[in-house]
Length: 211
Ligand code: ADP
Ligand code: MG
Ligand code: MG
Image (cartoon, rainbow, N blue to C red; front, side):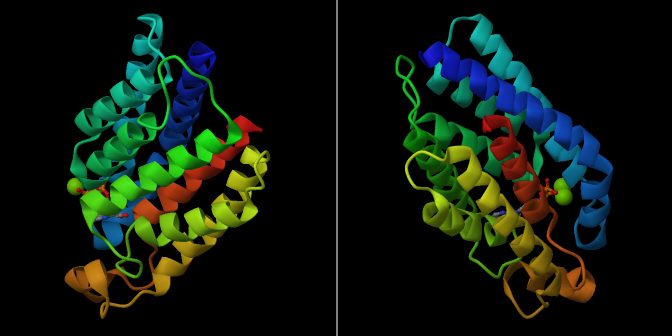
């Protein structure tokens, strides 16, 4: 049964790769406003590397845990950059929730998302209001906990992804007085955080794929 879960995970990563390729230019445009313009490229390279590694692990007979860990390692290596390291760590931490020889309950998916977000917070140290992907991930997590009834994984993730998108859009209003945006200066005011936007996009893909 873990093999089925592993194949499903590889399918999710294929979706991530496809949407990151579609959104590459737009994410780069947003990152160029206050950052260095490479977020689209980082997400495209990272998700492609992760999907390739997942399929290679699957072909080797790996279970769900190993597929996610290999995918996370590949995401970091392929993307470079801050978000690449954070997404890589998130996938590896999510993999820790799965077994190589067990199945997936609806709750496992929610626990894996929580573990991934925990890893981003631990490694990156950002707080809500710092204008990072955490500004989308924390409200996402709270909305998911509220929407999840024990069975409705896909619907709960989709609802939480809508909350994440609204929170990501709202980062446009974060001023230079706060957190990471202070370092960026007023340049970022009026533009949302690219990593918060890409987070919400990927969670929408995840919910849609599990439906
Ligand atoms: P880089 O900043 O190295 O060029 P990217 O452009 O790919 O990497 O990613 C930038 C995104 O990474 C930001 O928009 C933000 O969402 C996220 N990010 C940066 N630092 C942190 C952090 N400490 N914690 C969480 N997310 C962060
Ligand atoms: Mg960048
Ligand atoms: Mg960069």
